[in-house]
Image (cartoon, rainbow, N blue to C red):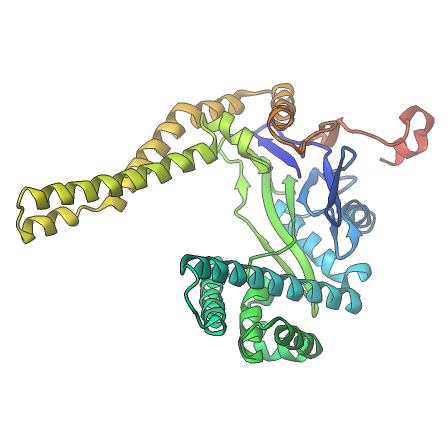
Length: 424
């Protein structure tokens, strides 16, 4: 896992990342503190990128791809950071090592297999829970499996629709999917028959079609582009989610940009393992706050039920009971959430952001490094896997000086390799 942070104000953008990477083989996992997660996108322009989650794309390590991009497009410049991000997306689609047809079909096959087994696990678990709850009563298990599968088809389709589509797959038709992956769906139907999974071929194709076009990714890399375009006076940040290529279409999408302006003076943007950094900024751990909301809702419903029972005992009329039952608990919960959110913003977040607005570059560097280090410390004491750790890499990006390393681990000794440092 990973912890990244970007701190922006009108003077500069500072980006920092830990070095931990988890390598899994079978049921064994090992953590190495040697990963590079910050990259220079150009030798001449003030633009960089950070990555989290997957360490490679279509079988190629990300550090190799960034170096290829820098070698091929380092002389290009763009008006905005978003245009740099879009150009990098174009590079990925056209890079020969990524657009290889066999690699694309292998990616598609992994996605189809993973989707099938995840859905099968959900259906199996839910069926087992129903069977256990029936205390051994006879059940039509085949019908139960069928019902649960179709129920989850519906839940998944709704979630995919709400999440939205990947830009390049918006118009990717079901007919095109069937043509591209006919033999793979032949294999899937054989697997369904062997496993006793119901559903027609058309139903599986339609459901997977909805998945593959959606912004739900089984395995992805978060790529955060940070810096300045030619027309920018202040820095900005563009987060992207990149999964893989199938049939010439890249599965990706951009999140909302963070742009420093005269109205938006400063910003702190954590990525990947964000809970510790968010706790420091908001004054409360996000999981603790979510638990408070859950307990509040449960308490409100219990209190409402107790009130109705007391009214019945006191001889309340049906109309009185009806009015009491109409109490809108969801509105009460929403108001509580709104009030607490406003308090957190006013008391904690705004104070931190106002401080960052006045920071010089040295203060921003210290803050970025400290946020990563405190996440590492928290994992060291509370987690069995220290998934954040190792040296903290830090880079500063300014309009005038460009991309400058502050802390950067090297696998070689700089003084023995001056020619490499000159090329950098």
